Image (cartoon, rainbow, N blue to C red; front, side):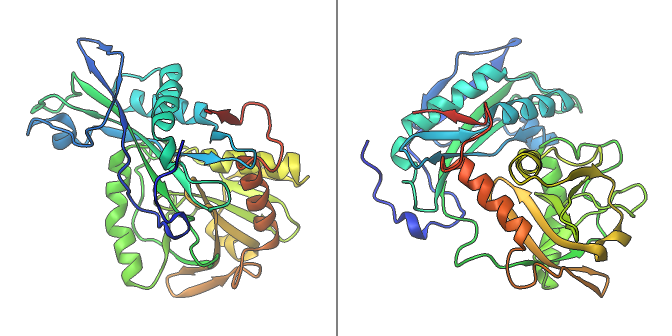
Length: 341
């Protein structure tokens, strides 16, 4: 299929409307068969559950063109499972795993012209989401829902090269104890907007959120998990019931152990330990790993020795290996690469 006339090398990380999207509606206790549509607009009643009580969840994954010309996605089964968990927590109907993957296949296939070519540095971002669609005025779950998938071509997260981030330890909490921090609910991100705007005003790239109960342990940022590297090259990530189970982070831990032969550990990480780490990165779908050069704790600067000017050596190996797997340059573990075409 002929590609769209897009300057792939100069795409940013923003919304570019594609030709098709997937829609399925839940009514009378069941999902309809779903359809592909060209209409990007959604019509809702003014009292729709999503508008009144923020009953909405979402996912994020990408489609890539591999070195051998296939169009693939990375571990979509885990996105499906995480969205099922999110739906259960917000009392929404579960969209079945097999249907989730089939819907991804459909929407990427019809938007093939928007899948960037191999070597461009760009990808097709895939955003599945679900929301309460019928009128709800009393505080209760909606009765009807809509599941949709939109796609948009996006450029590389690091335009002009990797620049290590400066982050601050935030006075705001990302999630409540025993709250919804472990699911991908829209309300979690709404809560983080003021904190990230304030961080940017103060000259920081991101916030480091601490555990809301004791505020002594590292959790995550507004949209990414943390990954640390010790001075003896052990890869460590925070453990908490309030952290979103990042698919990228889980994959990087396997890469570290199985591909790079490094020791890995998931455990509670205390703020007092930050000064002892050699490297720090933020893990997520958009950038894979964003290196952190400096953490500021209320005026006290903690500089990571291997990350002030460029990505640290272990972080760089992790990044190169995982992106190599995603792009087909390195053999993937079984089940990681889902071929669409």
